Image 1 (cartoon, rainbow, N blue to C red):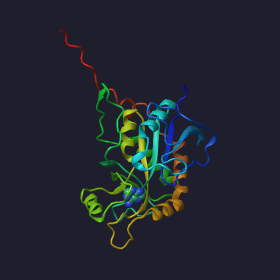
Image 2: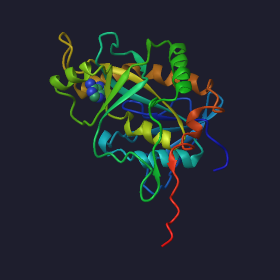
Image 3: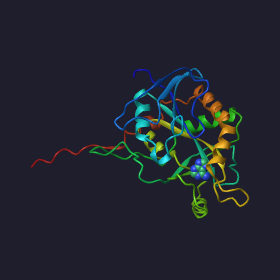
Image 4: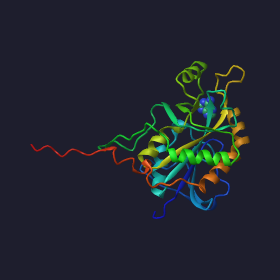
Length: 273
Ligand code: ADE
């Protein structure tokens, strides 16, 4: 595809479509990793071409550990996408991040297993830098958009990505807090790694739905609570996305755009016998 798409939005739980996406067409993309989570909708939002993908499928039929993440990112790259905003439900591990608030996290801890998390392998050896797992420019732009949308937004924080699908035990919740984690969710990895390998700018807009199960005066999280909180708050995330589409940061000079320059180990020349 020749024309680039400046922004893709991956909508998580409760965020299955993008109101205001005009003249949208639905694209079925084939990839070497099978089909993406759903057909990708491409249209115009905030005056920009924007792609939208429902992470769990539009009828929410895919578990976090079953997501075809490599297919999703392959398809977005193939479409010419440059930046990705991931919108995700998270539990809070800190009092200040209350249900209904938005957070733009700055760090990740990986507690997932068995999820294909790289495009490298099969003879192609590479190691991306991942000290800063999110694009700093996209983070600032997402923060500004969320504030303009009227949300209570927090800057930064460490998001621990758990395997699921069950929520944490109380002991795990306390462990994550002791590690310094602020938020918990099930989907930011391997997304962030695949985005970096695909040289896409990537940030997460995390929607706090609950206090997980560490909080003494709040009931332990269940799916019904998560979805009810999302239902009440999805409009503000959608407005933040609309504002972001009209105020994207420049790609020129952004390290995400050249992440592979120093990542790939060149194949060694065959040693003559
Ligand atoms: N998503 C929303 N709330 C969550 C929690 N408490 N743990 C893991 N993922 C979540």
